[in-house]
Image (cartoon, rainbow, N blue to C red):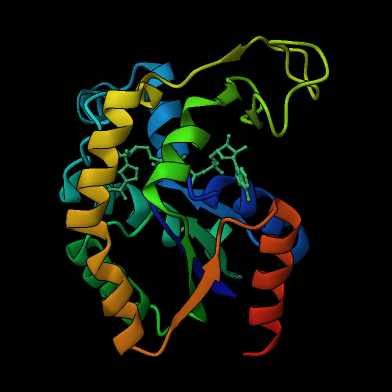
Length: 215
Ligand code: AP5
């Protein structure tokens, strides 16, 4: 299965991706995770990408397309994948279409998680993440058992550099301008499936699994 999770920042793409890949037994390809890991390793891509992510801007298409292309053409992606955070522009979507056509493959579905901007600001300012295993917490809704410490691996929790309120507002502005047009792009290709992302995490997962079962 080849699946895209679309949605604004903080819509729950990462949360759902983590749950779905276990159920669907396919790898997750998250450009946000790849950029953060490259930045931590201090690679050229990571440092270059961080200049954009810290401002709430998109990393240039050419860099991202090269990064994803390597992944999609690797053995790991042979039996399908879930894309989280890619594509984010029409140009990236077109590049994906070219990669798929070259490999005689197609997408199964594009799931769009709808969450209003006001809720996103609240969600992201309450988010804390574990830099070691990547688990995400919400300070009020899904707090860790011990304050500031990851339940799974005991690492100290952090706030992402791009989760400051002003940066989140910029990420939302960029989302509406550059990524939202993908909703129509995939609707026209009859691939779009819309989900109300304001429901509980479990309800959203169940709705996505339901949609995939109906294909
Ligand atoms: P990326 O890491 O992809 O960030 P994003 O898309 O902005 O999404 P987030 O990770 O902030 O949120 P999410 O939707 O995964 O929500 P989450 O599950 O964490 O990208 C970061 C940056 O990298 C971008 O800004 C850009 O600069 C760059 N980049 C990445 N890909 C790129 C590309 N293709 N092209 C160019 N640049 C690129 O949930 C958020 C919070 O809500 C958590 O606290 C969670 O616990 C909580 N939550 C989740 N679900 C629910 C629910 N149902 N109810 C209540 N709370 C919930």
